[in-house]
Image (cartoon, rainbow, N blue to C red; front, side, top):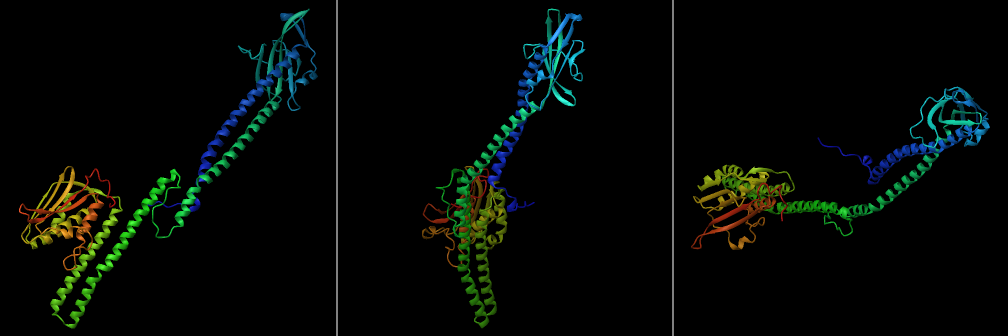
Length: 483
């Protein structure tokens, strides 16, 4: 199923992606860090103000008096609340106290304050018999300090339980103040990171925009390589890829232009001949049967020429495609041999085929077109009844196709332009495209094609050997560009 392209509005910019990638983790980190900092600040404030509670409890303990000893000790306290106002840090927090005997009997203070039922810690935080804990009083959370205060006088000895409670407004306010001081610095950091990211991305993408403007300013037919002198290293692979694509496009355009030029030039002659033959037949210059035969021959030659030109175009088309498969070269040659069997039988050629399974990576049409052109060329140049031998084998690990005919061979003056299109002569004896098609196919497959005369010991030319060597199937991943 074909994937739908995102509209331009839905595509996010590099700047936005970078901002998102930086700011989201930073924001999450700041949020988690803020929670941690708040709890740490609250713990620090608790530790600091616990000292105040302990000082308040000791102040109350200093106001106690005792009469009697141990269980008979009678404790009394005259602690005005004004004595504790010095320990109130502001007008928001409040301090409450209670002085009791060890059994919980209240001596002085706020009766509603719950009596301490806990135990002293094994290692008190201060050099005193003190315990700190959280509680509720009058519907508010409070921090409680409990001091076991020994009381001694000339008339007795006993132990009092001094409880001092403080509301948490001041502690929480201090923690919030620390948190807010930290947050605005973090928000400033986020703003600096965002501004720096936008600025850096703007500067870093300036070469990209310049490259895009340079490409956009090019002429429509300018597919020359892009200069990489002023391109950042990170963009060099992209530029090379674009240059490679434009190079392939240039080759396609050149091939298209060449095809149109060759088609207009080469088809003009048979069409002119056909027009002259039709006009001659209308005038009665030749008998009807002879005129129709000549017209038929011209049409056949024009059709063959058009088919071969289309074959040249298809070779270039398949060259640009990376899809290929592993095929048996011997099987492709056998199929082509059956197709050209009528031509071989017409000339009564002594045809022999020796083929072993040879895997090659290629397009099936390429292999068949290559074998067909080589066999047609060999059959056309071989005398009637002469031997024509075809071999498919592996030589040094490489697939080899060899077609050996009994023709006159290749003259030296023709060898230099042997694979040049339309170099064979006129339309009466061939288009001159067969060997050019073979060369294009072999180059597209990454192989080589050689045409060598077979010479007898006395110097006579016995025929022509057309030898195709292709890469092994595991070495040829895909058709290659022509050199």
